[in-house]
Image (cartoon, rainbow, N blue to C red):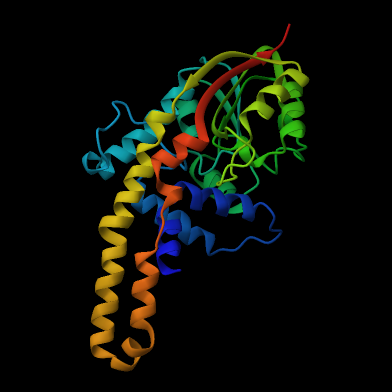
Length: 298
């Protein structure tokens, strides 16, 4: 159990997505969430919550540094910013901590953010008070800020939390004539995938057609994104699990009764730890990380 918990804690993208999704259901803001924002900011030194885009692709996880991870997060944002134009009105759906909003504004666009997360909203308002922000789920959002259509709508690893048909209907209604929806996320190849996060790719593509949306660009970025999983797996196997073994050994040397009661069971649990959620090969078998540019058909 301890090993599984460590593996889940080290899977930073999954942890952030889980917290973001479940906090959307809260009606009361927990100030302790600010501590988590401080933690993420201290670790990564930026305002991004996504896998990152590694280019060039590292040959092995051991070649990856924290600086590489931070650069990959910024390069991920660059993929999206390069697909909008100065002066365009852009909606960032599920804008997280506001890192992409900042990049969009600096690129000369007119960004609007949308987030259901109270802590993220407070963070964005304090850092970028000039950027319009809607605090709501995408499906239920109702605000004068959404009355005019958008030249571009961006979903960066956030559409997987949105109901497929309701979300696609809303996208189609908010796009200006000639507008683009730029969505980057991962998708399941089969409904029965072990890890059930992400829309099923075939269902997503069928949904686009149902709602009058057409793919104008499709880029497979899987190999550029999975190094973050490999890096997390390296941290788990080379640092976290050995540290647990070391800490337990030190404790049980001093507390013989605890050692008698728990040492054998702990070691057995650690020996059976599986880190499938951090395994790039498992991800490749079950999912694809894709960047789409979508327009209204016709």
